[in-house]
Each structure stands twice: as structure tokens, then as C-alpha cells.
Image 1 (tube, rainbow, N blue to C red):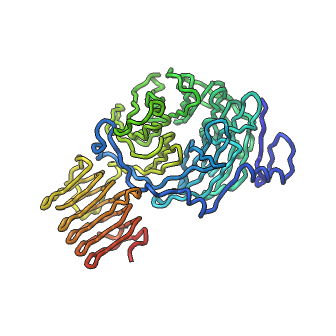
Image 2 (tube, rainbow, N blue to C red):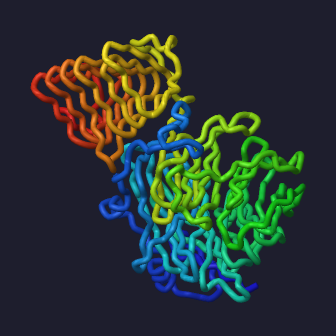
Length: 551
């Protein structure tokens, strides 16, 4: 095996190379092949807010107005355009999240080697920032993870790898506060056409090199700077792996789901489950779900497996958006899966992002397909955020669930309110008062009488408070999407009274005699558009103006 190790630059003072190079040539190579950019003005242009706001969620089994409105809602907080090299847009391949930062890898499909790594600050949900970007026409970057010290470990492929089709690349770079803070150290010529995945297992870096490749493990290699002392697991076409406690689940394209252990001397296959062969060179992932493993299986959707019984426990079929009749059969594939709690996220290619909430027997409590443009190629759920890679970039999403809607110290009688179970268009007639708790997820809201809500009120489209109507809220109110510029209208002699947070992706209109009243000392409001208060309209109470739109 012909292998080459390069230390690209001199910040660490160490060189690993197959031939002698002077300092200037190493520095030139670093600058030419791994180009970093930290220009805030330039990088922020890659973050798009055109479709920021509430995202529609449709039931795959019913019509688009009949989703499981009481279970979850989706808000897009930003969209990251993919890097462009030589007029060619790259594709997002993987996402890892550590603290306030999301780390995204990119490649170019086909024989051309191009890659990138983005570091995105997601600490402010109203304004994610692209802090740093590295672009290279030297290598694909197919996967990455970030360790507790902020070191990015990545894998991919380069054309300079070596003989016999061994183009796999493994490398690392240090970061601090979202910035690249060291040189890029890489090892080339590892067995396999390309590194397809890399992940951390205790103090080990485990890398997978797919077809014609291996699974390898290096212990503390980012601190020891030793790429050579790795243990190999000679199993062909391993696509993905993830650990849970002491067990590593590995997915082979040759029809095996394996339960692996790893010690200081070797990999050990503890058991395996036979599955269907995977499509050659296709993106497939797995994730642990308690003591079970969910794997993406292309056109078959996702399967839930258990190593103790060595069986498939359930299948999650690939579902379609009710309006997506134009999607070709070849684009209806489950590429990736991710979980958070009892929520499962399926990236289904042209069929979109399917979100399911499961019960303890893997039955579906609720399901909806996010109405997001572009294909769904990879998904990673971390806490309340969902990172969805499409063909042209990365959607940064936020999920709102009925489990997150607890309220306290309310001016409303919240404990007596029922959960909302109606459809997505809600109209309150004149002289009628209704009250709901939990998550109220709507497409349109018209209030002619009185509506009381304790929890989260999410409205994708318009909200109108007619004359002499009232909306009383304890919790969070989110309205609209930048794409459609929806507005909140508080008409004459009507009142919106809230203790909590308001987010309006559009304009706020308060007519003469209309009142917006904030209760308590902890309320806030964020408005992307204009705030227009007619003579005689009022805003009262204490609140934080997050968008600086109120005088």
C-alpha cells in the first residue's frame, strides 16, 4: 500500500511527509490547496433568510391541510448556500454539532475532487452566522466529526492518494471559537476508493472507506500525530457506523448490519443481521434508537433492528408529500435517518423530509412531511435543531413539539384548557370564546371573538384580529415565512395580550384603537418587516425589542 502523509503548513512545527520539502513549499501547498476564509461580510452572503419562518407540515396520508397539528411544527432559521469552486456548486455530505457551532462537510459527486468545510454559529436562532469556510480542489470531504477540544476530524478522497485505487484520505484541523486555528494534517493512500464516514468512539477515531476499503481505528491520533498505527477490520463496503455505549453498529453494503466491539488490539464482530444489499455507492446511514438500530434502506424506507433478537422489529415505509406526484421513482429513496427522543427523521431524497413520532411499540403517533424545496440527502437532529442537507445547501431548522410547551405564572387559567385537535385553518366566530393549551399549529388564523392559548401558537400564513376581538397568549407566538411575507393585523378595538415571546416573519400592523399588550417582565418580540402603528394604536407593557423596530 502506497501511502503519503502530509502536514499542510507549519503552525505545529511538525512535518509528516514522504519526501523532504522546504518550509516555503509546505506553506505554499497549504495556501493553494486548503483555502480558508473568515471575511464576515463575504461569508454572511452565503446565509439566506428568504424562506425563514414557519414551514408547512403535511400529512402523507391525507390532504395538505390535515397534518398532525398537535404534535410538532417546523421553523426554518436559515439556509446555508453550498460553496462554489470553479463555478461548480458542492453538495453537503455531513453535519456535526458541538456547542454553539455546526460543522458541515461538502464534496463534488463524480470523478472531480472538490471539497469544503463550513463552521456555522447557531447560538442566535434569529441570525445564524457562517464564521469560517475552507474550500479545496484537492480532495472530497465526505464526513467529519468534532471532538471535545474543537478538533475537526474528516475523511474523503484525493486523486493523489496512491496506487491500486486507494484514494481514501483522513485528516484533522484544530479550531477555536469557530475559526480554523492550525494547519490541515492529512494522510492519503489509505485502502479504499474514498473515506465515506468517520466518527469518535471513546478515545478512538474510527474511519470507514466503503467499497474495496476497510474500517480502521486510531487511538488519540490528533494529539499523537500518528496516522500509521491503526487497527483494521477487514470487512468490505462499510457505509456507516455509530456507537452506543460499548457497541458499534456498522452498516455494510453487502447485506449486513453488524454489532462490533473495539478494544486496544482489534475490532470484534459480536453478531450480525442479514439485510438487503445496498445500492452501490449510495449514501446510507444508521442511528441508535434506544437499544435498537434504525437504518436507511433506499426505496424500502427505514428498518428498525435489534441485535439481541437479531431481527427486524419494524419498517418505516417511505412516504410522499400529497402534492409530490412529479417525483421520479429513482428519487424516492431514504438516504439518511436521525433520531432525537422518540422522533425519527427520514431524509427521503426527492420525497423530502419525513418526521415521525413513535410509541414504545414503534407505532406512529404522528407523522408529517416538511414542505421544503429541494431534495433531502442527509439529516442530523441535535436537540431542538434539525440540519437537512439538500442538493444545493443546508437547511437549518427548529422543531417545536407539544412536549416543549409547558407554561407557568400565567394570567390565564391554563390548567383548564384542552389540547387543540382541529384542522389547520381556525376561525373564532364573533361573541365566542375558546381556549387551548399545548401546541396549536395552524395555516390560517382569524379571530372574530376571543381566543386564549397557553403554550405555542404557530401560524404559517395569515393572522387577523377583527374589530372587537381578543387573542390572549401565555407562551410563544410565531407567525409567517419570509417567502410569503405574512403579516399580523390588530384591527380597531381589538387586543393581543401576551406573556412570552412573539416572532413575526413579516409586518406588524396596529390600527387605531388596536392594542398590543405585554404582560410581566420577560416578554420579547422580533419582527423581520415593518412595524406600523396608526394614530390611536398602542403598545403597552415591558418587552425586549429583539429587532429594534419599536421607537
